[in-house]
Image 1 (cartoon, helix red, strand yellow):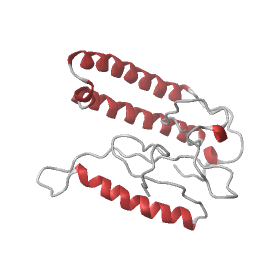
Image 2 (image 1 turned 90 degrees about the vertical axis):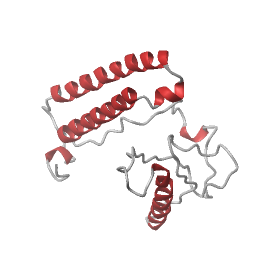
Image 3 (image 1 turned 120 degrees about the horizontal axis):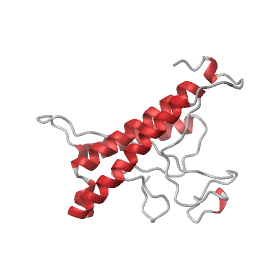
Image 4 (image 1 turned 180 degrees about the vertical axis):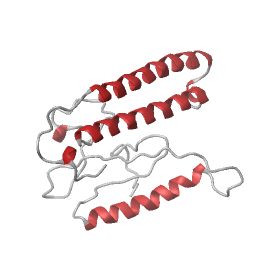
Length: 178
């Protein structure tokens, strides 16, 4: 879809059929319910770490991710919006300036926020001289390049990190992550 069509225009968009978007939400909700039931069953048989890697869980996580992407596409195609439906927020955002994990920012800058870009990376095919362990190096290089691009665009990157398995925690320790 082009970003120059009617759905992306600044004009209101009355008369949009919400049924396809509701259908995408229903499919996602059904997959999430299936995930919960499967997770409870798997966890009843195995420990937490083993359950995280259970093929049934991984397949459902992939399915939920695909359905969430489908919901994004339905909303985007119908409304021209770019919904952020995959962020996890553990505390209310009453005042973003007063968080205990607020970042030290350069003088003159009002605030800093954390942004994430996530990847689900499959293992390379058998026989290839690469492993998933090498991805952290690739991410680190990409982070350095992204930081340079942000600086060129006028942004001040206060802190950045590459991590595996979970989003990095910022301000949690005194290590120099870059």
